[in-house]
Length: 281
Image (cartoon, rainbow, N blue to C red; front, top):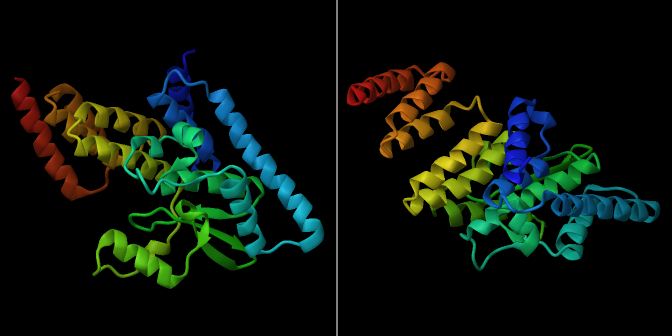
């Protein structure tokens, strides 16, 4: 089996899994392999294991002397991911597509908030520490919890803990000066949503470059691990129609119709499907 075929099979299996069983790091490596089909995943998996093992060793040694606390867990994560393995946010070339590919992030030790966040979540969860991604706009953040205490961590900025003031400033920097914090910004997101957010970064960059075929490739990968997400099928249909691939557009839009519960969008889409069928005749 080729690397690309293996990656697709991994993502297809994830598409059938319950969300809480998804291995974020393995999924992100598979997504990276679609873009870099000549890459061997074995050394990248070994590196992920090394992060987990280094964290476990540090926790075991530290706990004997100082016990466990939320602050200690955050310090352990920073020490292993940031200091020992040298990961940090790519402030200089933020929009480089390499920052959204976990294989290249491992190679370069630089990445986007969401790719680095996946490493933080994988490492924390390996120790049984509850950590989730948050629905914060424009800048991916994670939240760690212990005994009812919570802290929001910024993986892009050396795993710093973010206060409410920090979050307000960050929101205004990314969403505009009129933006204000809302309860929804603190809501946890699913593992699939984390992966969708990762791939959206790539898709949007291709669309900004008017590269519709590459954007469609990204959407295909997204549908492998999130096959029941209606929005993916609708966007695929619209882009296929834009590219002149009318049969593929109709198929995608009909799948959207079967999945969505939004009557307004169903009505709009039914009309669009009829228009596309008329163009085929």
